[in-house]
Structures are given as C-alpha cells and as structure tokens.
Amino acid sequence: MLITAELPLNQILLGDSIRLMRMLPSASVDCVFADPPYNLQLRGELRRPDDSLVDGVDEDWDKFSDFAAYDAFTREWLGECRRLLQKDGTIWVIGSYHNIFRIGVILQDLGFWILNDVIWRKSNPMPNFRGRRFTNAHETMIWAARQPDSRHKFNYQAMKSLNDDIQMRSDWLFPLCTGPERLRNQHGLKLHPTQKPEALLHRVLLASTSPGDIVLDPFAGTGTTAAVAKRLHRHFVAIERHPAYVEAALGRVSAIVPARMMGQVTTPSRRDAPRIPFGSLVERGLIAAGTTLHDRSRRVSAIVTADGSLISGDLRGSIHKVGAAAQNAPSCNGWTFWHLERDGKLVPIDVLRSLTP
Ligand SMILES: C[S@@+](CC[C@H](N)C(=O)[O-])C[C@H]1O[C@@H](n2cnc3c(N)ncnc32)[C@H](O)[C@@H]1O
Image 1: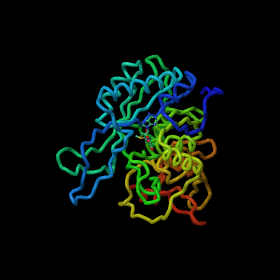
Image 2: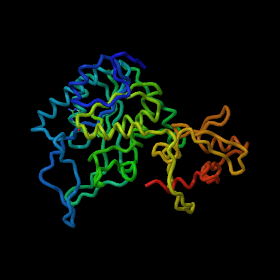
Image 3: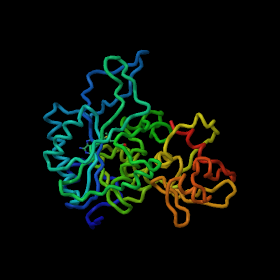
Image 4: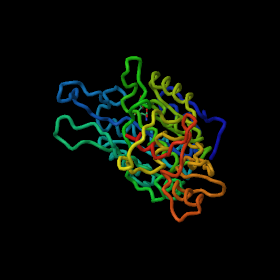
C-alpha cells in the first residue's frame, strides 16, 4: 500500500477519466477495477414479444464511431491505468462479447500479464427476445497483473473460505443487480443501465486487495466499487463523467454502514434450502462481517468475517469447522448449529439461504 499526498483518496471525481488519471501520480494505486463502456453497437430499439420496450444500454457514453475509435480510447485509458498501478498491482476489466476480446488484446499489447478470465454467470439473465441467439447469460472479467514479473496479491484462503473450504473456481454465479440494491430515480426507473452487483465487487476486492489498499475505478457509474471498498476498509479513487451518476454515487457511498442486515425472514423446509456457501451470504450483504453468531443455548459464540469464515477464540474456519470444534465433535452442520439474533430471538443462519435469489 502506498499513499501519496496528491492522490484524492476516498473521493468520487467528476470528469473525463483519461484527463483526470493523467493528473494522478505514477505507481500510486494497488488495484484497478474498470467497467468501461461496452460499445454495444445496438441497432434500433429492442422490444419484448408483448411489444414493450427493453430498457437496454443506449446512452451516449457507450457510442463510438467504429472499432478503431473504441480501440484508441481503450488503449489510452488502459495505458493510464498501467502507469498508475504499482509494480505488483492488478487490474480487473469487465466486459461482454462486444468488447472483451479487443480489451484482452490491448491489455497484452500494453504489457499486462493476464492471470485469469473470470466468468460472471448471471442467475437471472435477460432472455434473448428475438430467439435468434443463445441467452447472453454471462460477462467476462479479465484479471491481469501490471507486468509478467509482478508479485501479485491473491488472497487464496479468503476465496476458499468464501466457498465453504473448497478452492474458488473462475466461474462465479451471481444474480443481476436487482431489488433494493438497484438505484432508481424519482420515477422508479433504473438510475443507471449497467449497475453491477455489490456481491461481484465484494469477491473481486476480497480476492486481490487488503484492508488499507487503494482501488481505482475509472468508470465509476453509481459507485459500486467505492461502496464495497468502503465496506471492506479499502481506499478508493473513483472517476465518473456523468454528474447525475456522481451525485447518486456520493449519496450511496456516504450511506454505507458495515452492519447491514436482512429483511423479512421466513423458515424454509430443509429440502428447499439452496446449496450455497455461507460466504456468499456475506458477499450479498445478507449477513454483515462483524455479526456475532451463537449456538442455540448461547454457550458459544463466533464472529463472522468478510471472507465467510468464523472466529471463535483462537479458532478460525468455516461455519462447520468452528461449530464442530465448539462441541468437541467430529463434524457439525454449521447451518443449523449457528444462530443470529433477530428481534431478541435466536434464528438459525439456515433461514438466510431462502433469501438468496
Ligand atoms: C459500464 S458503466 C459503469 C457502471 C458501474 N460499474 C456501476 O456499477 O454503476 C460505465 C460508466 O463510465 C462512464 N464513462 C464513460 N466514458 C467515460 C469517460 N471518458 N470518463 C469518465 N467516465 C466515463 C459512463 O458515464 C458510465 O457511467
């Protein structure tokens, strides 16, 4: 981690990202998360079978005259990101089939070293209304080190803990950003067409940064990266050129409180409970890092961490492992052993699984 006086830490800057990045000092950030214009090249409006209009991305910021113009823009902003990254820093760029291949080539041409291409598989994608192609159900994130000899950071154990003690794979399943997380204007319409889910950023930042690190987002939109960085005790520098998005992002980030809790709870049958790792409940904000869990009789307690493991005394591990150790038993179902307090009553953490889309 490197903090320089000239770096506008924990701010959302209004303006053109290339112009503003040029004003920042070299080798000053630890990680970049970039969600650039996709250059979707939409031709005409898209309608559903019932003739209603699809609320897609047709904003001016996503329009380029041709591929050459898009490539020139991409080369410029990626070049600036590389200058701003410290030697061991990494960059994440998210995109779709429209742009991710061009971005991959340019990343390699500029000297970045690709570490993974991570697939974000959408659990609730928009259908292909015309029925002329497959449902476009994923986006791709390229994760790259600044240079081939970077000693890049990868929090392997945190990723494994998030995934119930199984090595994390490069295909991640998350829903689109919906529900209360989705920012809306006074007419109830989406404030931004491509707001990313916080769960995605939670995993990205937990994998590749540490508390205190500096994360740059040159295309901040509604401030998803900044919001998650703040929640996870990382610093951020965010840039966005659309004033309404900056305003929304500022409000969103200032309202971030670490201990967000879930809403209405219903008890599902055990068969209905989706098989998801405990860590993904933390990623999705259904249980906050720092929450205290208890066994049913309140004899033992444990604290939830950001990577989904529990800490109880000197012990740290999965909900199952810490539960087993607490009872001196060979195994334990952490989902039914651990409880959290809701309105003065203890409820098993199992009920949270029913709240995931
Ligand atoms: C794909 S969206 C990012 C959405 C964001 N990740 C979120 O979760 O809200 C890209 C954003 O980049 C902004 N943008 C496009 N070109 C820009 C530029 N040259 N400088 C600054 N911002 C730009 C757009 O206004 C848009 O909000």
